[in-house]
Image 1 (cartoon, helix red, strand yellow):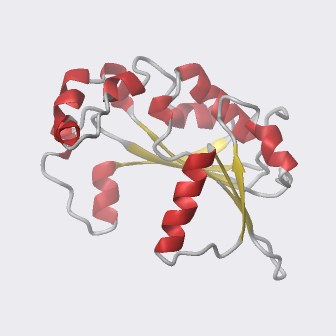
Image 2: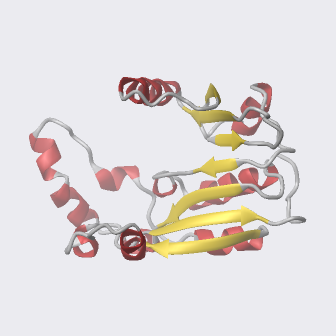
Length: 200
């Protein structure tokens, strides 16, 4: 997702990069809730395995303007190399002052597939046959905060418990024990002034 805001009353614009059924579902669900866009919204249905930077540009994306990126609930479904490539592309498309929000899941290194299957059993009982271990890429990968720092981003990482506390929300007592991914760190980063990587 990309948002641009400017001074002097310039309109904000946002783009969503995702596969078509996902874009349609999100747009329909938000509309049903009465949550219409507050900016010009331009969906760009594209698979991350394709040349999504070119698709964004073709839809009017302007990489010279600061951008707000959101990679939410995505990284565990990418191989380690694809995760790095995603942040390489984001960095190359970002002007100074751009921001990115994402997560880092240290526990993906030793993901507990048996625990994940047990926790998804109630879903299977209701006809939703999801085999979580077959969807995620486990094993070692570059920690997201470290990778972004190397690319010139100023990074803040917040543990799930701290985030719940910040917003005055109770953390489920067994959250860390039952989650097969373990701890989740929420990452917010801002690109510095002279750290833009090569163009994509």
